[in-house]
Image 1 (cartoon, rainbow, N blue to C red):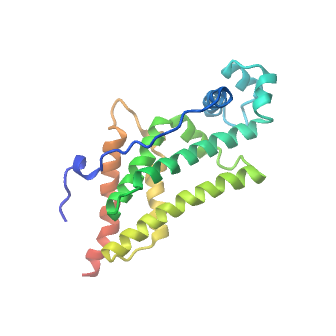
Image 2: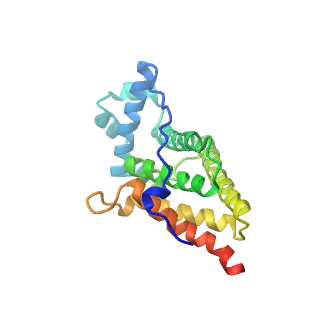
Image 3: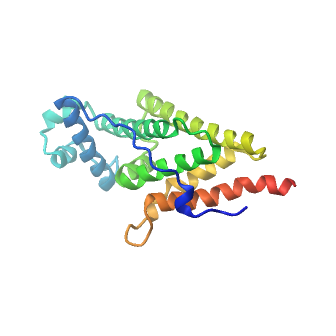
Length: 217
């Protein structure tokens, strides 16, 4: 099957409305999370201290503890904010789109755009995935499961639409494997932007799953 140009294959970007923090408290909280992400990215979760976070944010230790009782809560809020934002943006972009292949391409584009725009947060999420415990870990795991289930639904939708036979689980995990480590190699000076990479990555992935139907003929 022929492949149209990459610019034609990626759907036009839908920009969901992202509500800005409403209160001074919320705005300050968002700023602290940005600073905490940078500290965890540079020093690692175990190597970072609340004093490091205080220096980076320009806030006193007392002021920092006013917002957070521990650095674990900071890590939790970083992870929760990141995954919640990705899921909300994805749902907004998928709304009203019926074509199964286009929906998968939107999923890839949404993922890569956020990853490349928030590489420090992605590094923290990837390297500190096991640092959260108890209730914090359960809350974040629930959002991750929702994101995974959305991707499963998109792949199952493609299978049903095209009459394909392949393991949804293997396909989903393979797709995440392609996308999740982009922060380790992407160099904006030599590599394309998120839209171009998403188009090419989508072509590579979809050629693989669509080939299952060809082999059956």
